[in-house]
Length: 243
Image (cartoon, rainbow, N blue to C red; front, top):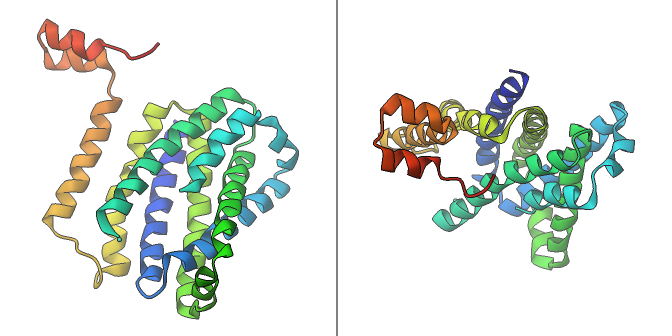
């Protein structure tokens, strides 16, 4: 129950982060957004870790487990970027869950700090290019306001997501996180209604994604019993790649 609650809060704050970030990049750039959100996220988790006394817990993650947390942080040119983001966001919860499986006593805040420190270190590589530095230097105050809100919200969101993954199974948390699609439509209408395309196709697509997430999270035996599939179909559904 606690894991489900954390996942729902994480989904809402993540959707709110998306809406504020979208508002900022309307007149700003992706690099400007990253320059604010990634370091602020890292600083936020480090402050939380210090307040919660979790800094000594950073070494509690074995190197392999820390690597699993760090890699997702390394994450419209339209469909290509969206597809890459979807793949990265899809893999991220799995990697985080594997990390907590490898270090079950590790601190959630410490895990978030590792992820954001890795993301910050990766982002600094872009600063080697003069064009990136000029881009960031041209950041407008109006955009900074939206990016700062996005940074705070994504830190809160990731904190709740990590907390949910630490106490609940991945297949319980992931479908609940898809609630962010519902929240995203509402919050985009509320904050960015003059900029977004919120038509029937978008809404139907969000509903389809949520239904799909719910279906993959259902127990196989429940689905087989509820729908009365013939034996060949039931046997196929029971097939496991591992375990």
